[in-house]
Image 1 (cartoon, rainbow, N blue to C red):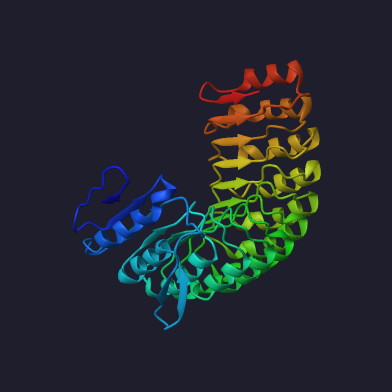
Image 2 (tube, one colour):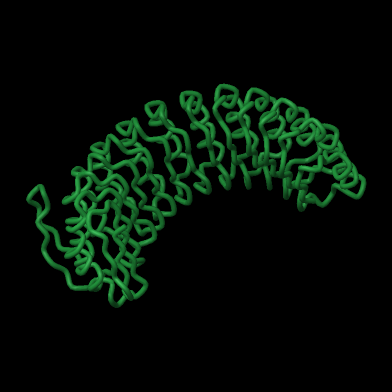
Amino acid sequence: MESITLTRPTYEEGESVMTVVSSDHDRTDELFKHAVLRFFTVKELRELRLVCREFKDNVEVTPVELLDDKIIFCSPISTSLYFMCVSFPKLTQLDLHGNIICSAEATVLAAALPSLTALTQLNLSHNFIRNADVAVLATSLPSLTALTHLDMSELSLDFMGVIVLAAALPSLTALTQLNLSGNRIDSAGATALAAALPSMTALKQLDLGYTSIGDAGATALAAALPSLTALMQLNLSGNRIDSAGATALAAALPSMTALTQLDLNRNDFGDAGATALAAALPPLTALTLLDLGCNHILAAGAIALAAALPFMTALTTLNLCFNLVGTAGATAFAAVLPHLTMLTYLKFGDNYNIGDAGKVALRGAALPTLSLVL
């Protein structure tokens, strides 16, 4: 492990991992210069994690000659990043999350990426990467044919940036995990992603939580989801999906038999959406986690969902908190709980209209292995 800290630098030559950590922003550049001098002792660097938390714009800039003979001006940190990347083509993991990366660093990274043909994991989350920066990075992504994990969550992207990114995604045929959560994708961005998804048949995890895709975006994605036969985890939480979007997703679910986790928390599809989803759930026998919390589900939707549960024999976690299932909905769930032997966690918290009768029914039906939250 190659570990560089401000207080006690230590080095183990010949290892394959480097972590550069800084908690003192005023000495970040000094630290990185120090790291550059020592990282060459790592003979075959495979993993690089830069945790400086601040790529500053107000430091001294120096000219850097990139591989394609272009000259750009950037900070010493960016210079370090560039030479670290291009000097180790066997690098497989590059973690730059939470470093306040901006345009200059994105440009440097785009220039370095084509040399990293062995890269399998790239984490750029929680940075200040904007639409224009994605346009630069997108030109380099197709060269990363070995990439399996791409995390670009919590950036400063809207639908225009995602449209540009989506055009590059079909080249990443080995991709198994894609995280774009926390960006304002909107329906236009979701539509562009939907066009790219059929080429990404290896995808196992897709996280689009809190991306404002709405009904139109959910409907566009639903048309593409059946092509993702390997998909195991789907997160569409916090997306303002109404009954129309939920109904479209329900039509896609029966073909997604590999799905183990489905998160639709904090949408607003109500009874109509819940009933449509309930009809689609029985074929999902591998599903272990289902999150339908905070969706304005009333008694009718709860009763429909309860009827589907006995078919979901692998289910271990079910979240229905912040709904209004009422006593009738709670009683319907209580009737099927004895058959759900794998269920270990059931959340009914903040369903204020369950009443004492509903709570008594649920507690009485719960198996000893079930953690019940009311």
